[in-house]
Length: 285
Image: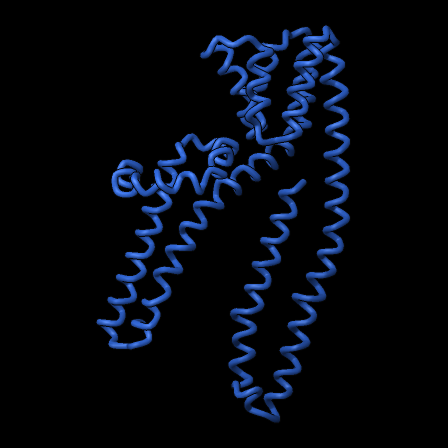
């Protein structure tokens, strides 16, 4: 698919690169190993595909059903699909970078505690990095540490150079600060074990504070959910049902249909929106 996209849209992507330079560091921070030209080619190809498929679908419905409404839809839905597809491609690296930062910083305190215990047992720093890089439980944090090991074992870098290189590229400010602090400690002849222990305790303390803050917020969200998404809909539907006994319509709409729309469409959508909101807030901790 990449080859086909580059073959069809590679020239246009080359011309567009200067307008989308902001994507290059985002792709690197998202750990997406793909050149900017190829990524833009894929975005253009998928946008063109979305336009073609949606237009074909609407025209087919118009031919089969003879409804002029589908012909009207075909004038604006395919361009909208194409624009949305391209926009999603632009936003995806930013979203993935943000997700990586959250994942790194959620697992970072536990990775530091593990490293501290390994250093305290007498393991040299380069073996500490190699050991923790094998633990997939730390998610993106262990993948960043794995890059340090890769730089040493594959590219022949020394530990300090490798750590500094990963610190330069990592999207997480917290991990970057730690790695640069580690470099400074080693170069100054400081105690690595003490540095890791103090940094781990401080990071874990901040992580616990965020968790406690989130738990307090949950109680507020629970009250909002009960009030807005349980009590309020029940009250409104009860009022509408009583009105239906007197009037058959409200604002030109059948009251029964309004109730059905609320029960089967509006309330489920509000609940899904609330769950997505909780998920986004939970990912912050």
